[in-house]
Figure 1: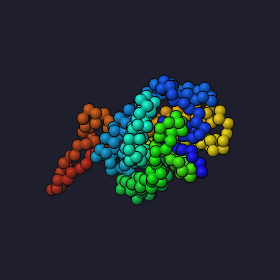
Figure 2 (figure 1 turned 90 degrees about the horizontal axis):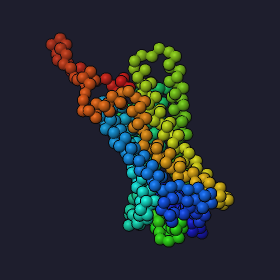
Figure 3 (figure 1 turned 60 degrees about the vertical axis):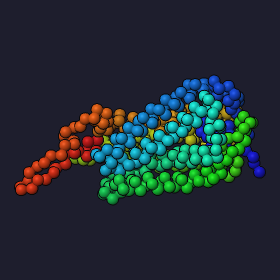
Figure 4 (figure 1 turned 90 degrees about the vertical axis):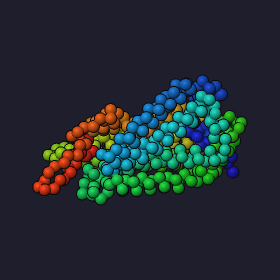
Length: 366
């Protein structure tokens, strides 16, 4: 039976968890690949991770503030964006913490080994968040697809209650899928340093399952579906431009473009990392030349930074591409209100006083 171990942390490429380890980390000033001679300076690498995480968490908090406002929470895409901001923030905080503790202070093993419950809980939260995030993006793409391509089903499908139910189902499914990893997580010998223990697995079948989750369920499958729905949505939008559009259709088009941009750019950031990790893992299983394994392993840290951008950029893409959300942000930050959007006017109709809500909907002002 194989005694190779699989680490459940995200500070190293897959090759560092196998007997064919091609990374050494004795010198805390750099991450060195002994087979390719490729070096990653530790400080710039960790600093870039921490900056991206800090900016992303701030952006995600602002996203939650915007999407839970009275004018936004009535719309289905706002529910997806809120859930997405929560789980993206978890990924950013945990990955940044792992890299900082590991590469800067050499305390990651101490933290994860403090108690087996810490090892299992950390694995559970991080893996669930990594699965949930891209599937929320895919669900939001489906929501926009229905709105644009099949508008007659909009009232039935694109509702906050449906979005909430879909988001909850995604969370439950992710928890179920991650459960085998959590159950198998234990303290195993650290084959990279050949001393001490790490939070990982020994079961070779679960090692394959772990890679399936990491490469397929966390990126390639949801991203493929996401691209399919968004391409169809964009094509339909381009065709609709040729005809005359009323105000509502024009504004739906604007908000849809913003959401499509968020989805596509996020997907683009995820794909390279997943492909590199998958190829490297296949090369390890096929016992390919160590130099080739090391070559793909060298790219891991570069694409890890790019991947992290996916979890940090949603708010900034939305603000740059949507006038409506920029206006909302300014109003939130300055604590001001647009009278034309928020004032409730009392209008006398016959003998009855009727309140007329002059709020302009989030879609109409996009």
